[in-house]
Length: 366
Image 1 (cartoon, rainbow, N blue to C red):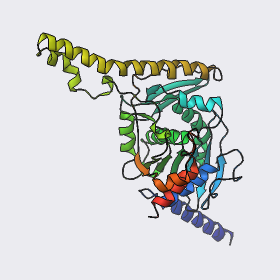
Image 2 (image 1 turned 60 degrees about the horizontal axis):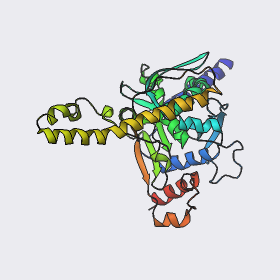
Image 3 (image 1 turned 90 degrees about the vertical axis):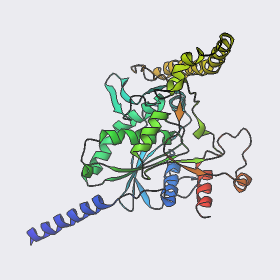
Image 4 (image 1 turned 30 degrees about the vertical axis):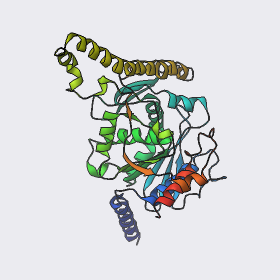
């Protein structure tokens, strides 16, 4: 009798494992999935489920909350009714460290290593292109959080879970971009059956890296597995400051041969053309260099006050920030602005969860 009971239990466990493994995330933007995520984002306050601006999650439960680490970063793990795991990265909070994560907007190569502490050297690959570069502050935030969440994800994978939604609002969305890339390349050598199947929703997120990073991210999430949800009234997805220089173009390009082109002109035409070309291209180079100085070197000095063992990385020679992911545009029309007016000085009026929820409900019910 005991042997048969054990056999039944083993069969039941095998069936559960098989059910978890076979459940697949479906491609494409799913309104209901996104609405559930917005509810989860609202629970990322220190006192979850209290005075929420939207309904609490209806189809998922919180299973893990990380410590606050790095630059005031934190993430939650949720489990939904279909055994799909969600990792939600918290957005900016009202602390200096959290804002320094945003302001540290010099870029570093999308593959390499960065010394975050005396016992923490973070080696990473976020793209398969040596020209790809990412926002340094959000890379640091993501790096600290990987130590928190990776053991939990490994444990869930051991139990048979294979479907993972990666999500975040605002700064959390920016970190979601980078975490998606990090997890993809970390598991690239594994068999398909041992990898996470991922789907990413970056909500109200700023731009995470340069064009070459965006190309790579779009490639690894193609087929409907990586979304960037933005409101046309929200200023945050337009950030950080971006400046394209001639160094950001693919090689070959015609700008490499301007001297040969100018040499065919007459003497006075040549003088005019060279001056015009210099006047057009020099400001962008100066802007890039100033960005690296103020939003790189100077911000790092402030971060090092709370992380004295961190070593300043070598920055990539670019500030050409680009949007990434399949963009879901939530159009803020006249009806929207009649409800969410916002005083001119209310800079967060169109960035919060409630207006995003209103827009997605209206747009996808029409």
